[in-house]
Image (cartoon, rainbow, N blue to C red; front, side, top):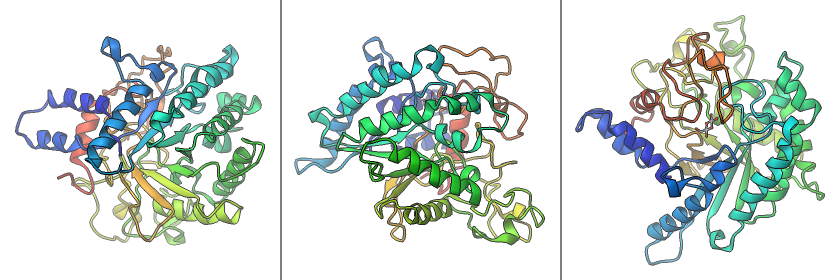
Length: 418
Ligand code: BGC
C-alpha cells in the first residue's frame, strides 16, 4: 500500500512537538509506516501546489506510487501496489452536517464543474498508460448517498433539497460511469457504518437504494462495475465487540441493559460487512462483491478498554462513545488494525483494512465562532462542540492536522503500536 509523503510531512510536525527519545517519539516513528488514503477533497487537490511548496497533486502521488512499487519489487517483476483515492467533492456535499460542506454548489453550476473539472480530470489521469500497473482503489463520496437513505424528510433541509434535485445520484452515477471505464480502478462506494445503516430497515433501504444507484450508472445496468463497499470511513465503530455478538436481542433492546444500541442488531463492522454481503448477493449482486473497512480510529485501546465480559453491556462494550452517532474527533479513541490486504482467511469478501481517514486529520473545528464557511466550505458543526460530550476541544477545521488527536490515537492504538 502507498505511503503518502505528504502524510509523512504531517507526522514531522508532530515530531517537532514531542521530546526526542520519549515514548511518544517512538509512537511517531511507528506511524511513519502507515499507508493512508489521498483525499481529492476539492478541484485544486488534483493539481496540488507542489511547485510552490504546497500539497502534492494526483500526478505527484501516482508518480511517487510508481517509485515505491519499483522499490518494493527490487529487480524482480513488479509487485502489486495499491493507492487509495477518496473521491469527495459532490455539489452540496455533507448535507446533514456543516463541518465538511464542500466548495461546489448545485445552484452555482456545481454539477457541471464536478463533472468536467473534477471527475473527467481524475479519470483522465488515472487512465494514463504509465499508471496501468498500479491498483487504484477509489472510495466514492463518503456520507452523501447514506444521507439520501436516512436523512431525507428528517428535518435536514439541505438533504431534502439535494434529494429533490437528485444532485448526489446524478454526481455519483457520473463518477461510477466514468471510472468504470478505467481497468485498474477498483471502486468502493461509501456505505457509512453499522451505527448508521445497521438497523434492519436501514439495511433494506441501503440494498435497494444502492442497487438502483449502480444499475442507473451505465446503460448495461451491470452491478459489477463496483468492486464493493467501504465501511466506517472516518468513523469510530469497532471491527468487533469482543464480549458479545451482533443480533443478540438481550444486548440491543433498549428495554434491556442499555440504550446504546437502540434495537440496532448490528453492533460492529465485521458483522455489518458479513450481513450486507449476504443481503447484497441475495439481491442480485455478484459473488465477487467485497468490502474494505476504515480502521484508522476504531481500535478503542488504552487503559479504559474493558477486558472481560460484564453483566451490563455498558461495562463491556469497547465502543465507549456516549452515542453511536457521534462522529467528530471522538475522545479516548485509538487507531485500529493496521492496513493490510486480505486480513481474514475466514472472510474472503473482506478485501482490506485501510486507513481511509488519515489519523491526525481533524473531523471538524470545535471553534463555535467559525460559522461562516471558509474557502473550502468548512465551518463549525455542533457535533464538534461540547454538546455530545465526546468531541475533543481545540480542533482545527476538517482535514487539518490535529496534533493532540493524533497523539491520543497513537497512545490508544489497539493492537498497541510497536
Ligand atoms: C475533510 C476533507 C479532508 C478529509 C481527510 C474530511 O473530513 O472534509 O477536507 O480531506 O477529511 O482528512
